[in-house]
Image (cartoon, rainbow, N blue to C red; front, side):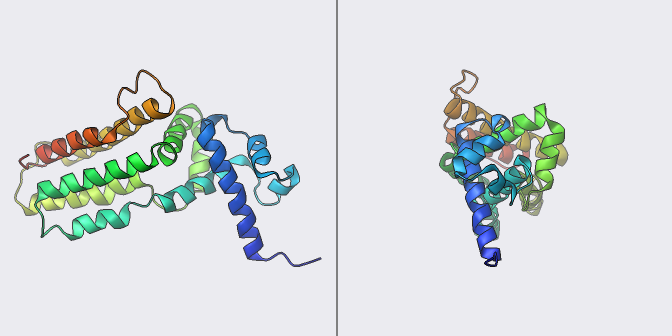
Length: 220
């Protein structure tokens, strides 16, 4: 028998992950089945199970791939790297403009799947924990909630601004606002629900920028 190379295995796994990703774009992640993925790949059932033991393992790799494609860290670091060249207020607006750009670009794909995963985590927390346990890389929201917020507070303090609330409350507000914008836009764009009245993230992120500046003691 010919030797199965690592490249062969990697290519097969990528084709399965790509197929699962396409299925997730068409259906809520919670409703995706292994049979959906099998039909999408055109492989036999045995062919799939040679590379993945179950659907959740495939979904872990789908999300890992999304995190690589949806990497905001480098661009965010550029904004913080220019902190001495721009005002705190301008920096906050640049960050929120960038987040709006990314959300507009990925609203119907990566953002949609992220939203579906949030719903799955609410309805099936143990399964969601299993999926998340197999994921590689840091999520964008995780980066925003840790490194980005820490940098914002450092810059605010450097400019001798006085925070208008406790840092942990400001951090919780920003995280909740980001998630709310994402949910609102996804509901409107992907599910056409009346709850999602606005599917344009840009004005919402502009309002968030103004809120961050105010809470961090700046002047809009």
